[in-house]
Image (cartoon, rainbow, N blue to C red):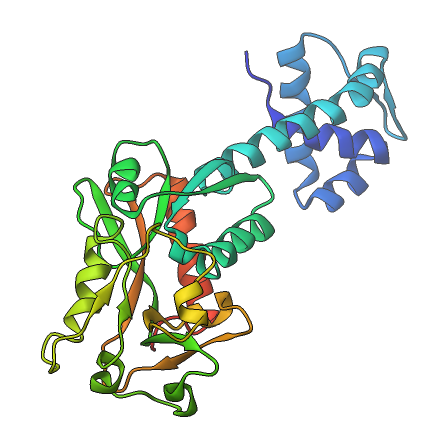
Length: 300
């Protein structure tokens, strides 16, 4: 039979005070109600816990044993309740996040850091993934959440805007166009344009290339040999420009800069979650919304 934990907590107060009047006042109930609680508790246990007379209250041997053993038991029960509440609020568990490499310089680390800092019961792991694989991995449960550039296709998921960025170009510090605070799209199109391989991210490849669709002469697009070229040699040498979101500023080495393209639309980074969210998924969404607001990632 489950113990009456409320009466047990009342008993512990009485065991400290050894006075019904003071114990009832400390608890905030009437003295007769406290007396009735103690009689029911003794009836449940089948033994006397207190010896009462008009002048004093004394613990029996059973009462003293209960007064000693109950506090750690109640503390363990409180921890169990807290654990259950934390799990129900999505503050407990293991969270697996997949992110595209382009989101790894700034966006993904900021979200992971906030999740860890604000939710001590969460174990968070984040791994870079090929962008087209992220939404399917969220849908089938291989990962719990994803961060992608662009509204990637995929069933069984929901996408939430996490960050909007201006689109510009990365270019060498010594490039002639680097002298301008903003660059005209037509001026950028006069140089070879470095785009990511379409297979690595069709959505972003198409969005970036579409910026230059109406320019004449037609731009020359260059795709690096690897999908994420850390050397960026062609940029450093001033041979190409690389259309990119504003987050490229944080990831650029000292000899490469970024300038916005005048009139270009924004580029959106999305948080990808399962269509049927668990408390853990709702927690990620809530933290992401708060972070986006605090860091002004989304317009008001």
